[in-house]
Image 1 (cartoon, one colour):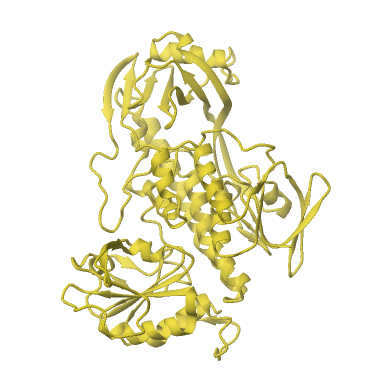
Image 2 (cartoon, rainbow, N blue to C red):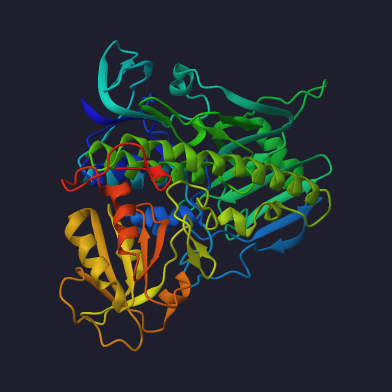
Length: 538
């Protein structure tokens, strides 16, 4: 029996598989496809997903395999009328090293994540279709199409919008399909030299549209999106190579023969739907299995990756007996409101884009806003977020980055380097936090990483036992990022969200909070059951 069965091996499924495997959790991941798909589909991770991928140890490979978002060239009647770069006025900042996402074919991102998973000794079982799920108070048993069965302590359905797992659980997927907003999509080949691969081409005409974006790492492959051809009754025709050639020729005014091939053809209709539950007993839903929405803003895959990163560490703590099972309830508590917000945002951005393209010069840049980076999504409402914070950062928010220097060597580093890995982080700003850091390190061992952050005027580490990590915040950027003035302890969750701010006199508050996240195995616990300060107790 495995600890966790993951159904679906797209980016949403591969993310928790990598996260759980690196934590030593026994993972089995299955996918019904007989082979790994070669679809480019999603155009890549946004800024927040890049932070997740950095924590998982794959961001360098993703950056090397992909490209920065391209400027958008808009046409009318075959003539270029405007270029737009939605990120022209943005740049990385000390607290946010990624100000934009990365263009990368989905198959390549999946390949990178599978390689990372293999380093942890786990491979995807392809051609393995789940057809039944049974569970009791201790485990889940999956039945497969070949007649075999397998058990796990928990299961996660990451199997897309048509999720078999969701249907087996009987979870409603309420919402609506807009039959008027239809698009045909595919991966196409265009002869070399026909189009500039340094821009995303967008032809918007009164009678339809074609959008072509080059797929990074290829010479001739492009993402193709277009308004469909229609029959005499105004019904959309199924996509085909010949149809793509006709659409290409009509809108670009170039010979259709330049489009030499097309694969993975599909028809897309705007669906806005959301599951009303993310958990049924020991089975969870993530990604498109739990929510689908308009593609405007490119948040589909990204919301799934971030669902999965929220869930992985919670499953680990419960499986290890270091947190109560109620901790798993906070997955739905935190992620379902984010999905509802995403549905609203993407529907709004779709409306804005459809309005913009009515006029020459309008294009897909209308779908992109600071909110689509994902950097402003947090969980201030969560029972795991203790009231507190300053300088704009509150408990529940994404934990900011900041450049620092290692106190022992003077080598440059970042807070993200301290956060990276399967642990809780406790930052101590100021000398008054050292007792709290020592206690946290002694009580929780490797599950908690303590880090004393020294200010510009501090001489450096001088008190043994403050933890193995110490940083110099020479420019005060870490203090500025967290709005810290006086001595302060900040607890950062394993998914890199702030859980608690406490003053130098807050040792008891830090102790109680860490016991929620990592306390069930401690022999000195004197409380049991129920809730501590509004959150599940460990």
